[in-house]
Amino acid sequence: QVQLVESGGGLVQPGGSLRLSCAASGNIFRINTMGWYRQAPGKQRELVAGITSGGSTKYADSVKGRFSVSRDNAKNTVYLQMNSLKAEDTAVYYCNAGILRSDSPSSREYWGQGTQVTVSS
Image 1 (cartoon, helix red, strand yellow):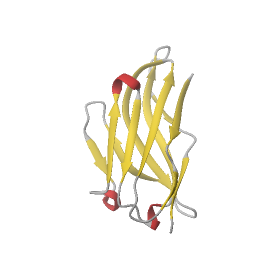
Image 2 (spheres, helix red, strand yellow):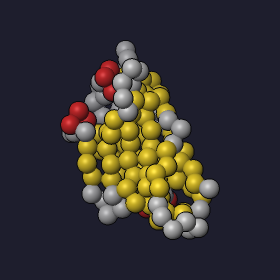
Image 3 (cartoon, rainbow, N blue to C red):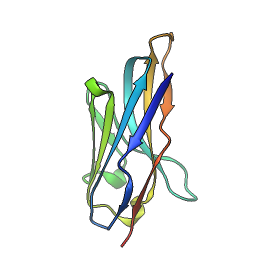
Image 4 (cartoon, rainbow, N blue to C red):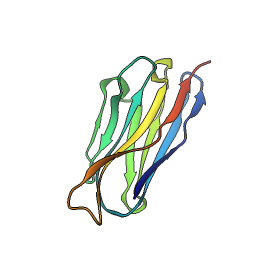
């Protein structure tokens, strides 16, 4: 069994910062791309940022220059540093990872349970 557990969400004022973490655990052989998605009320889930096992990154245009994604492969953990937060960043943030289990011939996507980020004064 594989689990992704997120932490670090909360309430922050506009212009503030938050750091999200997501740790993968379980019967893991290899983790490929890891990333963060978000879903605001009434909107579709969207990609925020992703990072490959080699460290290549990509970002949604709306967060470029404000958010930074990183990972610690030894800890099976991905991070999202969010700076200069805006009200429109308010959403539930979900961790996502492509994982190959030790007992499986192919990888699949796993999702975390989501963590609420609210940007408000």
